[in-house]
Each structure stands twice: as C-alpha cells, then as structure tokens.
Figure (cartoon, rainbow, N blue to C red):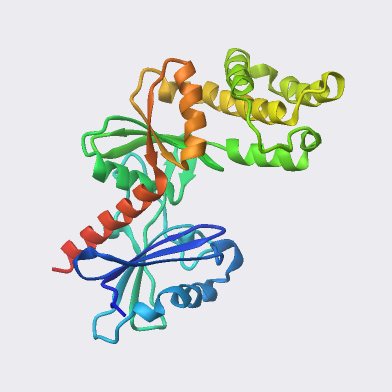
Length: 304
C-alpha cells in the first residue's frame, strides 16, 4: 500500500472527509465517515482521523502533514483555530494552528476561519473553498456566493476577502419545512420551476410581506388544494428571494461565482438570472480540495 506524503481533511459538523496524497501529489485514497465535529469530544478527533488514514501512514522519522479545514477548528473542535480578520487573503499555513498529536506519524495543522467586526460575522470552512477558487482564478474581482445551510456572500478583490455576509436561508428552509405548520404542505420531492420563479420575484418586490407569504402557503393548500410540489418550490423561492433582497449590494452589477452543491447553486443561478445578474457555477468540493492543496504548497515552501 502506498504511503501518504500529505493528507487533506475537510471536517464538518456532521461528516469527516480525507484525501490521501502520495508521491507526485497523486491521490491514492479518499475516505469519509459520519464522525463529524458534532459527535466528538476533543479527545475523539485523533482516533476518528486515524480510523481512516492509519493504513497509509509510514513509520519514517518525518510525520505526515495533515492539513485540516472546517469545524475541526471550532471552539468545540479538536483545537480552536482563532479567526483571522477581513480584509485579508484567505488564511494559509502561516496562520494555521498546530495540534500536538499522540501518534508521532501525523502532524495536524488546522486552518482558521475568518471573522468580520462590522457588521459582525464569521465563517469556518468556506474560507478554504474561497482560497481554492482564488488559486484557480487569480485575477478574479467580484462576488463569491457559497449557498448552503448558512449561505455566504464574499467580496473578492486583489486576492483578498474584503467583506462578507451570512444568510441563514438553508437553516430556515429546514426549520420551516420540517418543524413548522408548513411541514404539512411541502412534503414532496417534485419541483415546480414556475412557482419558484414567481416566489423569488414577488418576495424581491415586497420582502416585508414574508410572514404573510409563508402562511399563505398553508392557506393555499387548505383552500385551493395547492400541490406539495408547488408549495415546496414557493417556499424555496420565498426564502431565496428574501436573501437576494438582503444581499443586493453584493450581487447587483457584479461578477458572480456560485460555489457549492450543483443542485442548490443552480437555484441561485436561476434566481439571479431573473434579475439580470449572470453567475457561473463552480463545484464546491473541487474548490475545498484546491484550497487545502494551496495550503500544502505553502507548507512545503516553509519547510524547505
């Protein structure tokens, strides 16, 4: 079995993903588990990592660098990696937190998140995707949007994050569709593109009517037998439309890149296209790995 030269780790709240690289930066293994930060005590991180990568660790005198991003560096994680403050370039190994591992075969480094003091905001994990995007697109000047549970809008210029804003759109959708009265109306895997588009437009025009529009979904189901597919699509459109109303200073008249899950990003692309704002789609996983690789390149330069 090939021996690792370095290991890239994306450690979220729910999942752990590791990529093992050998000589010539060749990918020799990709591993994952459900042992995310939310399930582990600080002492559980190293064993969870070793479960995945131990077979690829040699016994040489030099430990294998393990470059980590995500919630592993949160206050409740393996070891806290203190935020860096924007405006600045996405953090690399120079700002990383070194973890003293019990196993001498690994040398873990945790990349920090980013914070903003006015208005107050934080990100942890997305900064590595942004670093990967900048590495792949060094001349980019515009907006990077990372749709997800907590969607980020980041202004990028001259290789730096100048400012960013977070919207809890994904979490609101999960709460409303799973725990509110709307759960009785939106349980469907089907999709109504026209209903989504209309809801985005209507909410952008009148975002102050959000609460009324939300209850209207339940009322339409009861009174007019609106389908669950239409209700679910409208709910998504209402919430994304509300987000676009709040994020207008970021996307209006800007070059926009959408990083993340292709299906979710395509919804944002559709909503933005309605407003005459063109956005390009970029695979989020690829950018995470590109960001971790950029950090590894920095690590190699510091150890020469």
